[in-house]
Image (tube, rainbow, N blue to C red; front, side):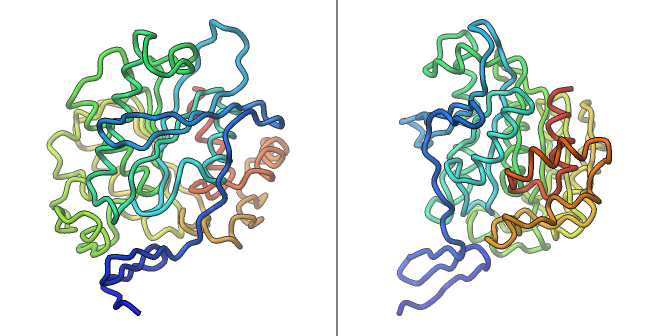
Length: 331
């Protein structure tokens, strides 16, 4: 058996012969088409054959008429940059729910994963996806659903864990490289990852150009001179009481608030909530703790319970956080 050279549970194990083993089994793939229960349609699209971005999945809710324009929610999945997919059951449940409840077109990006594709490739793929969406601003882009139904003056970005880090990176990049006729209204940062320790060995391995320290702007936005240029009007940072990433998430909120960025900034903490990664464990996906009635505003209990009993969500540890997020989009 080949020797293990790098071991980062619960994510990946790397062998001397280059083979990569992922600890977590692949989640069920969901085929595209019309969901008869929700009315949401899905399709997979190619983002760019030139840049190498694999593609994305679009979630389209019921449309009331040919002239209806909906906000667009661009989603970057989590998974420590090395696991996760826009095509699996967890992403499907999350974006189907948000598409229905917030009445948005949702798109989840299939960025390339490390270590087969070292960082910063995931950042570049994700930026390329936003650029691709911007090509639809004149109504003549390559994807008809975006041309016909998406309002690119009302764009939201969202990510959980590593996906939140990517959403942050893309939003800053959008501020530096202005995209004409596309406006990012808000960014939803769910349990953002900005490193775990002073020397994050796993991140350093996945991103050979980084030392894994606070001098890397992707781990410590405080050293990024472009932070005040972040191209969005509103930012919602969600952290969880029991998540090891909580302190760095709160620190990010504080740094952004002092940076000179002029947008509206909010912080929400889920009491007793755990990390995004716990939702990937099979025994946790169906956990009723995610739906515990003590988490909820009593007046919202009946509706929330009805919706989310059937839809366990990755990265949104409690229904309270889920409710805040889609109401925040609507407002």
